[in-house]
Image (cartoon, rainbow, N blue to C red; front, side, top):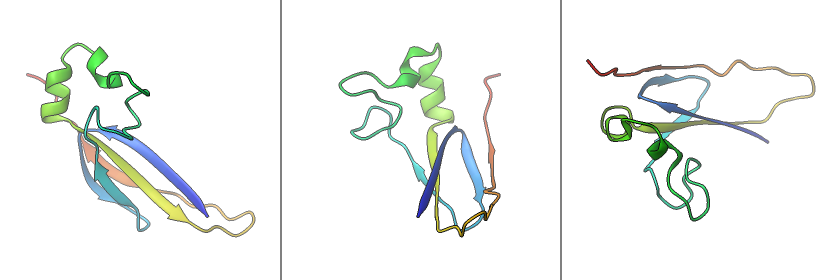
Length: 84
């Protein structure tokens, strides 16, 4: 079993190959962007409030079983809102 995950900022439109999406709560337990006992990685950037309000992070993930030497292209589409 192979699991692939990716975090993106913005809104996810589609996830191909039977993948799934999950909105991430910044600073929550188990958040990949939050080091153990620390602040969320995103809070270190200037304009972090805008990032979390308009472009919250989303985790994309796929779980697949691949045969030896099998390859797969995992696709997704997303968009990002930029400040004016």
